[in-house]
Image (tube, rainbow, N blue to C red):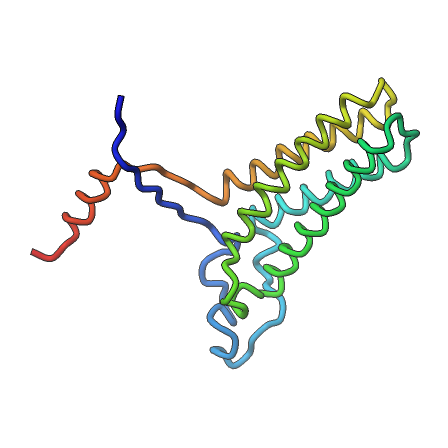
Length: 182
C-alpha cells in the first residue's frame, strides 16, 4: 500500500487574546505601552501553565519530604520536575511581559512546542520510574501521581495550543490551485 507525499500544516495559538487593547502592536506603536499584559493571566494557556507549575511543585515537595527507596530514581524525578517548573515559569513570565512581541528573533511557538514535547517525555519517564520504585510509601506514591497529573496537563497544553492537521499533497495542491487568480 503506497501513500503519497504528505503535507503537514501547523497552526498555533499564542495564548493571548487577539487585540489586547493598549500596546497590542509592537513595542512603541502606542503612546502608552504597558509592561504587563493584563489579559494573559486570564487566558486558557496561562491557567494551564499555572496548574502545571502547581502540580510539579506538589510532586517535588512530596518526593523531597519522603524517605527515598532509590536515590537515583528520585534524584532524577526531582531534577526533571524542577527543570520543567522553571521552564514553564519562564514561558509564563515571557508571555506576561510580552517578550514574544519584542524578541521576534526567537520562534516562540516552536520553542514552546519543543520544550513541552521533550519535557513531557522526560516527566513521563520520571513518573513511571518513581511509581515503580515507591514500594507503597505514601509520599513517593503521591509524588508519582502528581507527576502523572503534570504529564497529562503538559500533553493537554500541547494538544490545545498546537493543532496539527495532515493533508495529502494532492489536496494541498488543489487548495493552492483553487485560490490562484484565473
